[in-house]
Length: 274
Image 1 (cartoon, helix red, strand yellow):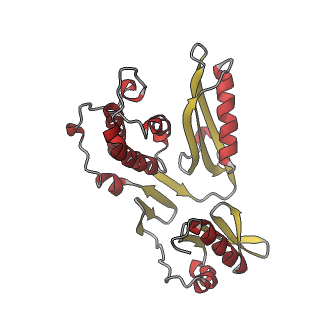
Image 2 (cartoon, one colour):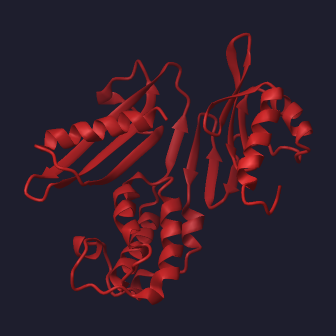
């Protein structure tokens, strides 16, 4: 299948068929479960041809599929272990997993001292009629935007900034390139990460916020969804297990900020259950 235009589609079909024959059921895109007596005994997340299996005995549960696909021996992720994967570091403790991208960001040779601006500001992000597009920056802009997009996978605070700057992916300016580089430096300095721990009786806690300008007919909506235990109150809930988030400009005619919050709520509910 390698080299064919539709190779990814053909591979996905082949994998799903073999996985189904080995007892795995796809419950949502790229997530499979294996059941025993009606209860889920194993969960498998798939990214291209890499598999991550969670169960009491992952080697045993994966073995039939591994043999059918002639895969390498699996790597066991032990307690207090650490694993690198496509620009991410995954750390495991007895109670949780942590995802971070510190090493990935440190590998990018950008220093704040080398840039004409030292901090992000609205002027760097917003569009200006006086700002000229520099076609010579297209390739480097697309490269750093790709990095920023990948870092967004573990940094919720970047969601709005990424959505705004992605508009300049093919028509960059010097200021917009500086804004992207400053965003990457800021993430490295903050050292944010995602943490996940188990819950006995899960529920989704969805937080929504929005602001809207009636005069400009545009605003900004944001949501964050956390997987928490049903017995946890909102006032005392953990702020780990962040599973979905989004922050973007609202470009539609609404009558109030309340309407914008409702739009963000609907968007949040839809994406939280995808």
